[in-house]
Image (tube, rainbow, N blue to C red):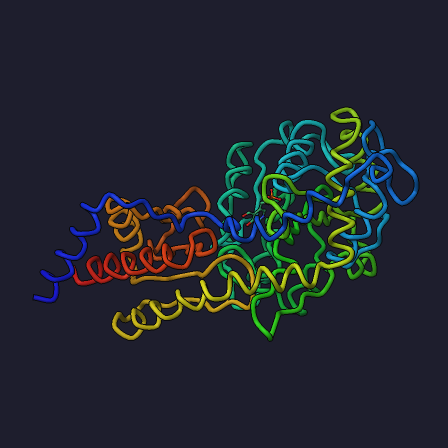
Amino acid sequence: MQNARLSAEYEKYKSSGKKLDMSRGKPSAEQLDNMTGLLTEISDIDGCFSENGIDCRNYGCLEGIPEAKRLFAGILGVREENVVVCGNSSLNIMFDLINNAYTFGIHGCEPWSRQGGIKFLCPAPGYDRHFAITKLFGAEMITVPMLADGPDMDLVRKYAADPCVKGIWCVPKYSNPTGVTYSDRVVREFASLKPAAKDFAVIWDNAYAVHDLTDTPDTLLSVLPLAEENGTADHFYLFTSTSKISWSGAGISCIAMSEKSKAEFLEIMKVKTIGFDKLAMLRHARLLCRSLGDVMRMHASVIRPKFELCYKYFERLAADIPGFVFSRPNGGYFINVNVPAGKAKQIVSLAEEAGLKLTPAGATFPYGKDPADSNIRIAPTYPTLPELEEALALFDICVRLACSEQ
Ligand SMILES: Cc1ncc(COP(=O)(O)O)c(C=O)c1O
């Protein structure tokens, strides 16, 4: 009877032809609109000059203008001289770094393409686009379980003793998708890691560095100064961007690293570009050096009710369905859901057939293979609240339908 009612409700959604989307971590139109002030940060020719007099309309200034370097240095907890400011996508620079390692080699080592047998550590559940990069280059991806306070460091140390293991993907704060922030212990253990490979790269993707949602935000130690103390700084490449601070398609990004790694990185970057968009840097630095805290509180006020709406639905599911568990992160863009083993793919395809797009099941694991078929990444930020409510009601039906079957 219960099932017949669920099936009827499901069919109603399916025939309604509605299109709902909880698949990607994108800012909503309301968030983008709230950043319209960026358009008026430059209104005349005098306004096109950086604080040290660089004409931002022209070529040059490879590392980025000082005020933009300062903005990112503050966000990442590093020195300005460690920072290189780039274009609108940090993922793009991560790709470049891996490409550099494969094509030219890093830290004076043979290119990875010539060394062969390259392996890369992938904490999972993790970010599908990270895994897509290492897959494209042909590195063997080794899954490292994400624990409550970061990747399993015993395993990281064990694998890093193999010289074929060349690096690790890390999202250290409000991790995509688990929402986990690395504890002080985990950060210190990273900073003191002594990998066998001289050309081991820790990709420290701090995409959600300032993206707090609650009154009890997580704190993250800054890894680069700790690595400097340990003599390991050359292994660390820190990234962040304004993609979820201003406009995802029209922001600025950065990479921060040791002086030695920076010099090596710029040797290649200077061949690829004469400099990134400095007017974008100027606009962002002016607005955000003044008001980053207010901007992030504004975003939180839009996003928090969406997370809370998800919790309302997920609490009911957790009460009714043994094995349904979900995260309640203090920030970031995602809620991590685990459903009973073997059900994730079925739930995602039921949702898709009825018009609700979710992140594909398995995407949060290397090679798209979740061994338990249980992890689903929920991205609630993009839809409006009424759209989200509809999406969650349909998700609820799909979970109950899938889990009622033996
Ligand atoms: C962990 C993580 N890194 C990077 C990105 C993409 O960053 P960008 O827009 O700067 O390329 C995302 C987007 O969802 C992300 O979740």
